[in-house]
Image (cartoon, rainbow, N blue to C red; front, side, top):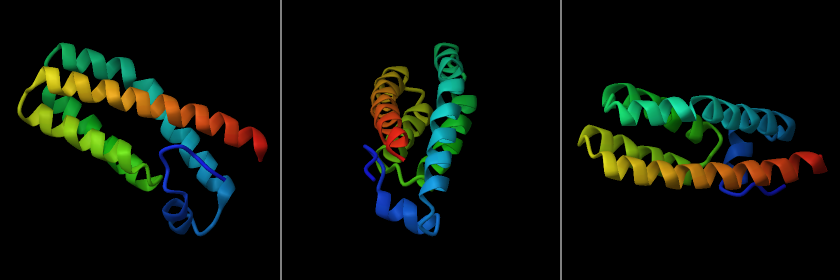
Length: 115
C-alpha cells in the first residue's frame, strides 16, 4: 500500500498493522480538513490568528497521528506565521497545505479502491 505523503511504515506501527484502520483514520483526516478549510480562510481574512492557531495545532496532531510529516511541517509553519501575524506567509503555506491534501486525497481514492 502506498499513500502519497504518508509514512506508511510509521503509520502502521502506530496502528499495530491495521490497514483498514489506517484507511479510516486517513479518511477522517481528509474529511475534517475539507470541513474546516473555508473556515480557515475566513479566520485568516478576519485576522483571527488565535483561532487559526488553535485549528493548526489540532491539525498538526491529526497529521502526526497519520504520519503525514509534510502536512505536520506545513501546519507548524503556518502556526508560526500566525504567531507573527504574517498574513502573506500563512496564506502561502495554506496553499501548499491544500496542495498536499489534494495529493493525499487522490492517493487515498486510488488506494481505497484497491482494498
